[in-house]
Amino acid sequence: MQPVSDATLQGIGFGLGERAPYATVSERSRGRLVEEPRSRTRTEYQRDRDRIVHSTAFRRLKHKTQVFFSHEGDHFRTRLTHTIEVSQIARALARAFRLDEDLAEAVALVHDFGHTPFGHTGEDVLDACMAEHGGFDHNAQALRVVTKLERRYAEFDGLNLTWETLEGLVKHNGPLRDPVTGEGLDGPVPVTILNICEAFDLEIDRHAGLEAQLAAISDDIAYNTHDIDDGLRAGLLTFDMLREVALPRDILAEVDSRYPGLDDSRRGHEMTRRLITRMVEDVIGRTAANLDALRPGTVADIYGAGRTMAEFSPEMAALEKELKAFMFANMYRHPDVMRVRAQAEEVVRDLFGAFLAAPERMGGHWSEQLSQLDDHALARRVADYLAGMTDTFALSEHRRLFDRTPDLR
Image (tube, one colour):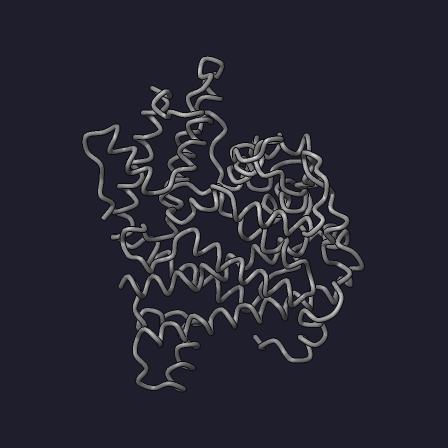
């Protein structure tokens, strides 16, 4: 694996000059579900980004778990801080390729809107609870949030985002359906996504634009690096453990050679910042090579390429796979984390059962017109209510409804 060269950076322009011919162009946006007059002061993707940042769902990310629950320490990442880090990397990558930075940022900022309280634990429990009602998928839930559940505007539900931001949200990890057979590539396509596609075809059998692809790989870069930082802070990981894995081992050797005797805090930060740089430069080099081979003249060429353009090199992909396996074994499945996960599972399962049995307990507009809902619609409303909760509110609701609530420690 070779670091990205100056010649490569100069060849792609490193964000200088006019937009790349394969960039997504705001002026040619496919529009919104509900037609609106265009802004006189902002591009369409700037408006999307601003609506996302001002939404209730965005603020809730502050108190939703990334890996460690918020009360375990003020310095651990939450869904919000993770999202901000992803958006920073996505914007930098979009600038490198002279793309629409606002679109890349918008997709990055909205990509975790569908996550439940207590991280993937909450999602797994809700998916099990909803097994007879279409299941639960956080990408589909994010689409529900931005097309239905946000209640801010007089003329429409949701945020009424552009086609490009919606398709980036839904497809940032790749197509959902086989273009020939129409079958879902990772199981059945969630009904929420299919329903939106009937009114606003998101072309789920094709790849998204390059801005969304870069937002997706920015997510991988961000959590690969900041989860190491949080693991060291929590004491679940040590530098000696990280030396068992090729990528952090190499970077630690660089840091220790240049800064012998550095204190552990600075040592960890030096390692993670170098890890981000190495991954970002690898993505730039590999993506530039892919684009050079494709020679796209328009964004349509990116859609029709039939493959992902933004990716790690094979060497980096292998190193990243090894790192993920290490993190699952030593951090995400650490006994302390798993013990708290089990407590969180209990909270979410209890709340789902309680609200399904007595939905009037949800209160507010969630309890309106309950008699008009069939079993599937009622279960989905309960899932919507639960998915929108922060960790702190879920625990508060559990204390309100039950005599004993786990403290998640």
